[in-house]
Image 1 (cartoon, one colour):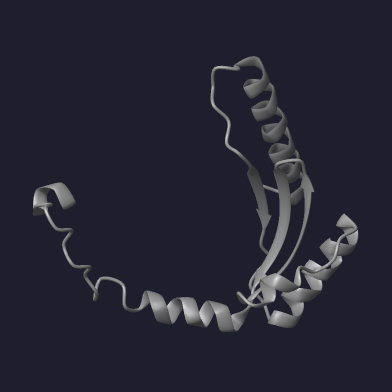
Image 2 (image 1 turned 135 degrees about the horizontal axis):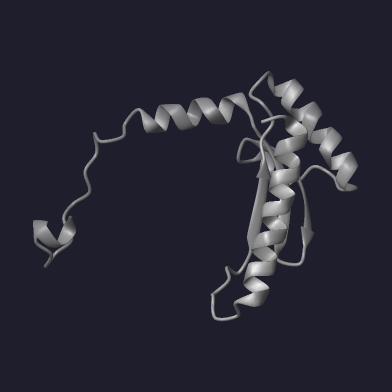
Amino acid sequence: MANDDHRSALIAGLRALADFLDANPAVPVPRSVNVLHFPHRVTDAEMCAEVDHIAELLGTSIDPREREAGHYAASICFGPVEYRAVAILAARRAQYEAERSYEGCIQPDPIPGQNAAQAA
């Protein structure tokens, strides 16, 4: 799907969701909605440059708190709806992969009073 087609489809889908929720008040809605954009994975500098550009388009600035988590991000909120551009920097991706390399190797202690069939 071409970029313009994807953009049109996403916008139409968001409008259709809003119309559906408006027409069906019995359907519960979430407390918030986050729309996330992740730059293509290139160098940190290139991803940060893209997020800088998006921040400029949004009229916002880079969130310095995100840097502590290894993210470079800018966002804008429309009430409980947030559009957020996030670059996950190389060091954070490496840390995540290292942590995931232990997946399945560590098992939590059983919960007292719960048998194996209940825990599954």
